[in-house]
Length: 344
Image (tube, rainbow, N blue to C red; front, side, top):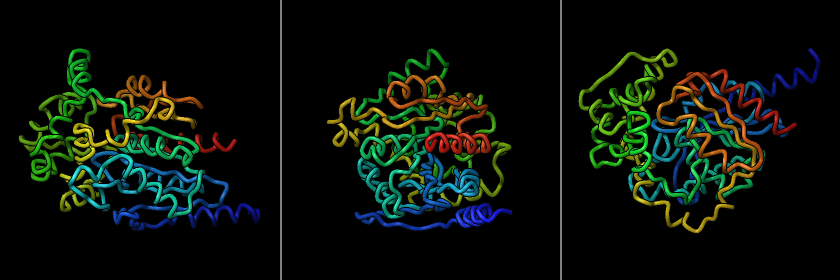
C-alpha cells in the first residue's frame, strides 16, 4: 500500500474511535455528546442534532460510517433528552439560549466554519435557530423529516390541524395538544414501553391515525398498546431507549420543546428578526421520507425552499419518520456526497 494511503487509513481509524464526552456551558448547563474528530483539517465536521423522543444514539449508523470516511462527527444529546441536563421549566428551552449552548460546544472542540449542520425532527428546529443566530458557523445544512423552522414566524397549529383534518383525514399535528397537557409527562412515564412502540412505528401507514390525530396518542397509551419491533430496530435499541427515558424528569423535560412553542417562549428573542435575517445563505439539502405522515415531503418543500438562496436539493427516500435508521446507508451516502460538493 502507498505510504499516503497508509497514513489516511490510520487517520480514519483513529477518527472512527471517537469518544463520549461531557461539556458544561457558561451558564452551567451540562451536555453529553459523542465526538469523532476529522482525520485531517481539510475535512468538515458534521453536527448531528437528533429529534424527539430520541437521543444522540439515533445517529449511531452515521457516526461510525462518516468517521470511517475521515469526516468529523459531533452528536450531542439535546437539552432535556438523552444524558444531557433535563430542566423542567420551559424558559430553559428558549431558542437563543440553546443556540448559544451549541456554539459554545463547537468552540470547545475548536471547530470553526467547516461545520455541516444536520438535524432530524426537532433537531431541525434547533438547527434552524442556530443557523439564524450564528449564520457564519455552517458551510451547509441538511434537514431530515422536518421543514425549516424560521424563527419569529407564527406557527399556526390550529389552522394546520383544521386543514389537514379535511385533506388528510387526520389532524397532522393533533398530538401537540396532548404533549402540551399537564398530565402528558406522567402518563408517558407510566406507559413508557407503549409510548416507545407508538413513536417507533412498525407500520408507517398507520401513524397518522394512531399517533398524529387529536386524541390518538392518549388513547394508545391509556390502552397500553404495543406492537412488534420494526425491522430496523433491535431489542438493545429499545432497551437503551427505555433506560434513557426512564431517567428522572426525562419524559417531562423532553416535552418542553412543544410547550415552549405553544406558550410563546421564543417570542421575546425572535420578534425583532426580519425576513432577510431568516434567509438561509448556505446550501441546503432536504432528506424527505415518502411514508412520513407527520413531516410530509410536500410540507418540507413548501416551507423550506422559499428561504434558501444558495442551492437547494431534495432527496425522497422510501421510509417513515426515522429515515436515518430505516435508510441508514442512503442517508450516510447523501451526507458524504454533500460534504464533497461543498469542498469541490
